[in-house]
Each structure stands twice: as structure tokens, then as C-alpha cells.
Length: 254
Image 1 (cartoon, rainbow, N blue to C red):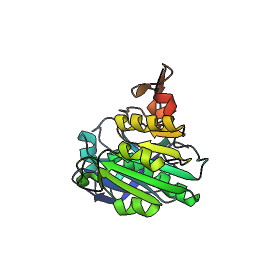
Image 2 (cartoon, rainbow, N blue to C red):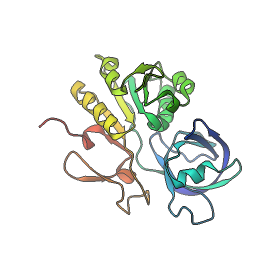
Image 3 (cartoon, helix red, strand yellow):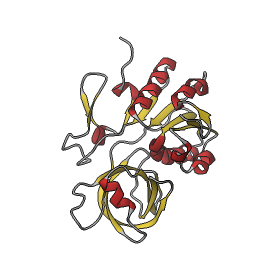
Image 4 (cartoon, helix red, strand yellow):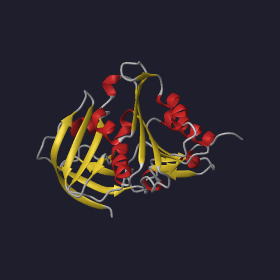
């Protein structure tokens, strides 16, 4: 159930020049794929809360993995242990329950953030998890050992070849899938998600994508995060998503 909470920072770790992991005290009962809206303190700056996908959630903690991209996240990066943040959530629709034994997860850059929690839940259910982690360069790869420890198979791909295989994560996906009867879960840039969705459609495999969008209210009222869907309509990423069945948002063929 969505609530507004005041949550204390337990840990705030800088992982790269731009990427941080934030752990807050208190569980919120989020499901993998959901997100929260974070307010930075008692001032009006920034005026709007910032949305962050749930990186991990336990009965006593909430973790967020984020990249500094603007004024709001720069202010958040300055917050120290013991600071209090306002957190609204959990919000949105997360990943659906899996129906198959094998799950293939595809992450692009900071899109790896919500897939950690999903991996942890899949492993707890006894699923076989294959994880494809793609980034532009090795400097953008974070928490590799933690992701690797949860996957039965782990593949690292960078566009410049500075870590793992050189290329695009979507280039490797068809080979990894082979003839497997897997479900696919993906989060990352829109172009990557489209390519993943097309591969899934060609192989007739179920695929679910977590979309990124600029959000204001986070509850579907402002309509600031709508995306066009395959049927010609529109969906609100915050309230109808952020997780969608791939065929809802991507259309291929005639």
C-alpha cells in the first residue's frame, strides 16, 4: 500500500563517478519493478520529488541505485548517513509472477537497478536466472560480483570492449536464448528494449520491459509520463507501468 514515510539514510555509497547506492531504514513492502518518489528534505528545492526504481527491499531496508543526471540527483548525492528523506511508495506496477522455470534478464546501464531485486526473488523461487549486463564502457558497470552471485549464467557486454564481450547486449541475446522456453525481463534505454522485444517476438517468448520516463506526480494524475502503445493508445508509465508486456508498447510487422 502506498504511504508517505520519513526514512533515515543507513548507507550512501558512491560506486562510480556518477552512480550511487542509497540504503534507507524501513521496509515498504515493494514488489520487484515498482518505484518510489523521494523528497530531499524540508526545503522546496527541488520542488518535485524524484522517482527511483526499487533496487532492493527487505523487511527493514529499502535500497536505491541511481545515476546523477541533474540538479535533483546532485542534491541527493550530497546527503549523508543519518539524513532524513521523504519517501512515497511503493508506486506503479512491477514485474508479474513468472510462469516458467528459466528467466533471462537483460540490463542496459543503470537499467540494472530494478533487476537486482527481481533476481533475488526469482532465486528464492528456485528459478534459473540468466543475466545479460550491458553498458557503454567498463566504468559504468557496478556491483558485478553481486549480480553474478545471483545468476546461474552471467554475461557482461560493453560497447567499447573494456569489459566482457565487445558489442551490444542485444546482439548476444538470440544466441543465449537458443531454443530455451524462457521468460524475458528487461530494463534499459528504449532502443535496447525495442531490440529485446523484437527478439522475444521472433522467438514467441513472453517479454516484460520496464520503461523509463520523466515523471512529476508519480500517481497518474498529471499525465506527464504517457507513452504511445502498440494499439495506438497511450499509457501512463507511473500508474499503468513502469513494467509492461513488450507487445503492449512495441509493434513489429504489419
